Length: 322
Image 1 (cartoon, rainbow, N blue to C red):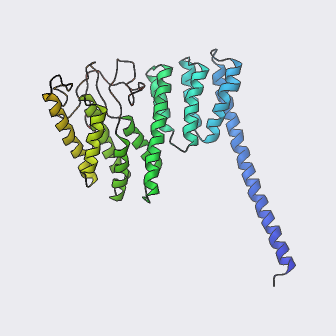
Image 2 (spheres, rainbow, N blue to C red):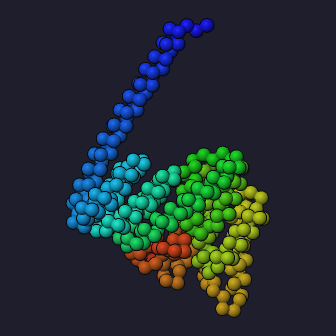
Image 3 (cartoon, rainbow, N blue to C red):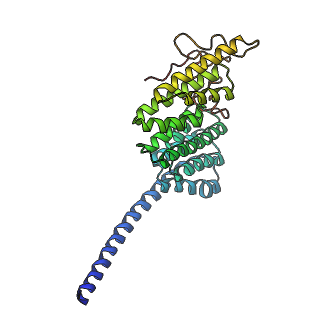
């Protein structure tokens, strides 16, 4: 039988342990809070360097969302760079807040924010209009959510996938290039079941993006492109066959369109080396993006807002490297 003294000593030891844990946690929290407060002061100084923002906009609009970003784990340097670029570009406070709100929502959902931050910085570098940047990263955030749903569906079926956040980014890029979600879901499940690593699945995903952009540039409708990808999945026993079957479907549709009176497919839609030709506006299509507009503007993303990315007017992209 355990004596009362032993029970008492055990209780005291447990209390001491809990007190030590609480003390360490409190100390760590205090350090983090102090660091965030110091970082916020730096950001406040950057905002104060501009005459574009009122006291209300700085203190009640921007600083609270900036604090939320830092507390959620968004890197300080990324946050600082966006603020500096916003001040330099004279972005209004409400547009800046929208940008940070999208990043914060994405971070809180456990999704990678680096693709959004890269798009924002690219937009600033290209002097892209603020409304375009907001539209592009909104679409990007939605594609990240869809990509995460595709990944979760595969995980729920018991598949083990390494590098989940990286996989979400890869799938989001392909969704951005109008690759059907069903095709990407099939790729993740089939590729994982075959034991392919993330690099191999990424290569196939990039090739699907290339084929999708090729189909768009060839003048095929979204419905026909969807059916080509769907039929390719149905006729593919493994991931090695999917891209070849899609290319075969594209060749068939392009040939059929050429024979139709008033067909929309351009005779030069496919060059001998497999690269995409320039579009009717004189711009080109690049893998990872959609046809560009005039120089200085961003290309259209997922059929909606332009994306802050510009490619040379007379160069056509090559398929993704293997």
